[in-house]
Length: 88
Image 1 (tube, one colour):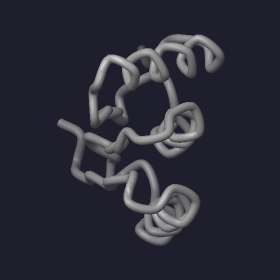
Image 2 (cartoon, one colour):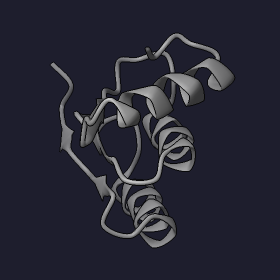
Image 3 (cartoon, one colour):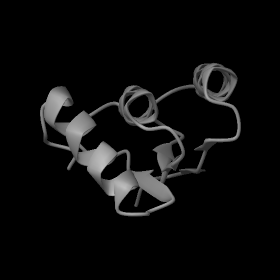
C-alpha cells in the first residue's frame, strides 16, 4: 500500500474503512514520510485510527516528531497514534 500513488492510496484506505477495519498502521520503512502518509490516510477516511509503527527516532529530532504528532492530533482528534522506535 505504501508504494501506491496518493490518489490510489486514498481510494484503497476508503475501501478498507468500508470493510470495517478500525486501525491502519504505517511504517517508517515505507515509501512515504510517515507523517505525510498518515495525513493522506486520515483525510481520506472518516473513522479509522492511523498509527505509525514506527516513526524512526533517528530520522527526525524530538521537536519535529512532537510537532508532527501534535498537528495530526489537532487536525484529526482521537484518530492518530504515534509509535516511535529505532526502526530495526
